[in-house]
Image 1 (tube, protein in one colour):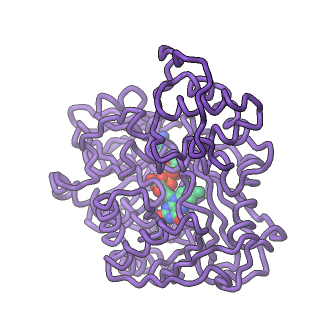
Image 2 (spheres, rainbow, N blue to C red):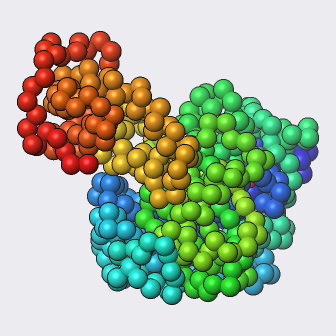
Length: 498
Ligand SMILES: Cc1cc2nc3c(=O)[nH]c(=O)nc-3n(C[C@H](O)[C@H](O)[C@H](O)COP(=O)(O)OP(=O)(O)OC[C@H]3O[C@@H](n4cnc5c(N)ncnc54)[C@H](O)[C@@H]3O)c2cc1C
């Protein structure tokens, strides 16, 4: 098969998206070669590190515009609607037992996150799914250090055991008579006049009619400069660390916090084998180190957050495993599916924090495009959509700045942690510039400092940023300092309480 005859489709990548795509293509009668290491030996794979929450609604937060919520929730629901038949089909094709769905998600939230909870509840109810508000205390008998103000029960939002799902998907593909699995990474992709030619890392050539690139965060390294020729948008990597714990505590449902500090919150997910999954960090990583282990800092953040906001007795749990995975995503944070500039080279990737949920949908979309070219032409995930890079100023919204502050000093922040050091360094370089600006905040800061030129004024200077007229101020050295250096009276309103 390899190099000697041309297969219909090659799929590069054996995460949940690659395997789901291969399964869907086989079901349409095509011959498929899968190229990538087995999921059990694919370091850095996002799928294996995933909590596998099927987050229909709990990934919504108050900062997301309404139309964006509508778009994302409708696609998640579309994928979820496929789940029962998909899991049945996988069990039949693999000979493995059915992967069960574990019903129900609790979203536990501090008072400051009430708006996020309201947005999640709104999204669920608009889709006619139940969303019950409860007091935060006593969720599933859990005892966090800080009792959450609110708890939202989403009975229709389930989770599953990702290890079992990947095993079943792998077996379903392997057992198919039209499938071949070549257990090697791909080094190059070369479309020529007659076929798309792939070169495996061990030198073996594979020729195919179409190739589906489902290599996730590995796509930039695979394509190199070719990415631009093919018109493939940037594929970024969000490094996530998660753990598997052994604990006598009973965790019956997923318990999670809302999105915070650019992560999908802190979450505990029950696994079928009696262990508990704890996730997850999310850090943009420009050069993923696929075989790298979790750092002590990442582990400490996860444990600190989980004991504080979900269950303090977790500190005594056994750490059975730590996992590092790189979530693939792109500039507008929507998946990429369909043809590139060469219609024989297709993408199925960039599922970011919802790839397990979206796998059946993405698999069908890419298989539809291969069997009926053009079927994705109007889909919001189509890979050739316009995606201009936003200017930095567009990204500095109140919500993203709050996310940054949470990230730097958030729930898991420990005295002397990296976030606090970074914040100190940032303030050291920006505070003088703020004092040099002439906008209302800069002017008020100058007046305040003139009245109390002592270190104790620093918290009050920071609190000025919360004044109603606060707005992003240009931090440029070219702005001249205020003309008058003589102190002006500071009204009560100018000196904020700290
Ligand atoms: C910590 C964490 C928690 C998450 N939690 C959830 C969750 O609860 N729910 C949810 O829906 N989603 C979750 N996600 C997101 C989800 O895991 C991803 O969106 C999804 O797994 C991406 O799947 P993928 O197949 O595209 O990529 P991956 O799973 O990363 O698979 C890509 C595969 O491509 C292979 N590859 C790379 N380069 C090459 C090459 N040159 N040749 C051949 N193969 C190559 C890799 O070895 C890898 O196996 C989480 C992710 C992380 C990291």
